[in-house]
Image (cartoon, rainbow, N blue to C red):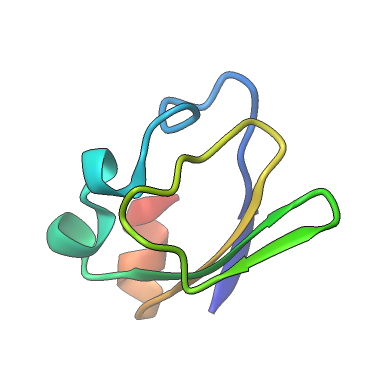
Length: 68
């Protein structure tokens, strides 16, 4: 389990989890998205990632490394 901050210049900012297909392509899951004071636990596929979001991903060391 590792957390990442979505940078304003990130290529995933502005996309939904469905568009990104992270689980299908890398085998990792997003446990939560923290957006300021809002915590989105177990986000659904229509959730969009925004710059400044903090996400927690769950996967093997290799999967997380590939995601990074």
